[in-house]
Length: 246
Image (cartoon, rainbow, N blue to C red; front, side, top):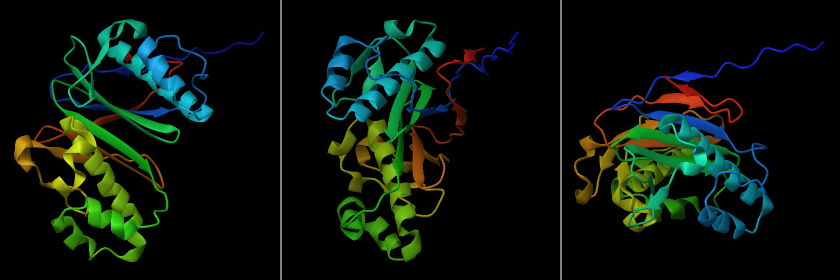
């Protein structure tokens, strides 16, 4: 007779004001692209517009796992969670104090969760860029470009993607996206990548904290939180064994 020991659900402390939880998620093989068990009709329509079968599978996996994860915090069925979009398209949960943000690159994803604070997260797999210097000129602030001149050639790819994730996380936190203009926010190019330049409408740089997230080789990830300090707790999400919030 085959015996087995059932998995014990990971116990996660409930979310308090000031806490930030960041979840690492794998999009490989978690959900088949034709499985829409908890998604809304609008989500399904958007996924169906994707041309690549792999991208559709990743999108289904991302949205299904996001709902499964948020349901652990909210005590709702995944299908009962209702999303809405703010003026510039940033999603939020209707009638909930939970703030969240999502990013994925290839088969890896991150979900950041907090209470009543703006936050953004971004993950990027490193890749060759044909015109790296041109990207810096178009997207880095003048102060960042001055720092760039001191970066050694062998460190330029990692530095670029580290800063790019900082910028993407910031514009996602503000809710403006690329419409804000990534050159309007500036960071220290050496870690920790402190926010040094902030558009006036989003307050002083001291109102925001940037944290690098370790996600493995050849990948950069950053978290931005509207707070003067942040020490995120990092978890790995297992869709077959969701966490228990205690």
